[in-house]
Image 1 (tube, one colour):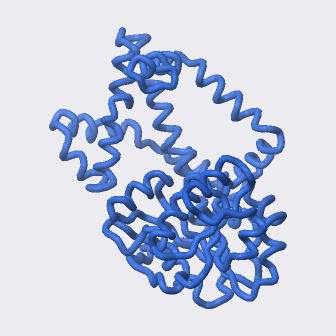
Image 2: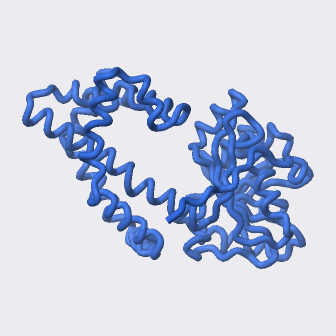
Image 3: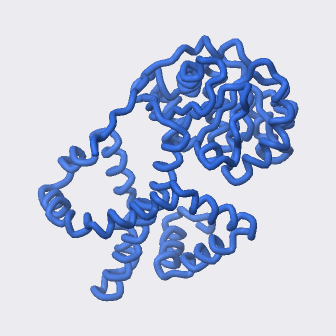
Length: 339
């Protein structure tokens, strides 16, 4: 099957949103980053949040801060930056009833999850847009300070105005993603973002952790390596973060040139041992579960029951030898709360 090439955008027209009131619903990691950069971009930003520590933080940061209902009433652009599992309830109880009679507003999401699975239905009278950063909130703020951009995926689920894509690009520019060195917006969709996001979380990320755990068990239990040396070699030294940084800047294979010849040879000659059809089939299985809605159904049930599986698995991992040694090591290195 031929690989399709996405449409890329490197700038947007900020004037499209500068005369609008932009409500950030949820002053969490993404909400704080969006609000800060939009304000620096000259956009009128208000915050909607429940009365908690995040509400107080928004006020301390100098934002006009209201209840979610009041912020919705005052806004022309409403960015729902809430955790996936609570966004539908908040939307239908605290946002939609106060926005439905507006003659104009934009509804914005930072991920595709709830719209892709139908937990939130795009209203018929408004543009429903996705601007999904491929970066955590703290990273967005760090790049903003450096005057650099970052990648985002854009999607449009409802184009009531006929200008939804232009608004999406304007918002991407307003939050510092494009119009700066290193920034790019990829024309995508709510469905595509949901697939790639969840598939990342369910394939290479757990594969990496599983590889770490298997490595740790083998070298410490069978070959006499000290657990401290194993953990430092695997990730605690920070070398892995440096390698990942160079991957983002140079590419997956070009960054290998920064390694020794011994390392390059080991990487490339042993790669095929792990790049198997069994691995591909596991990735296909995860993708099918995401696309069919099976994972969303499973996760919804998990929420309703109070996260019993998540708590059990997490508790089990914290009782592992690796976790216990890591805690002691990090305490000695001054990286833990105890330290």
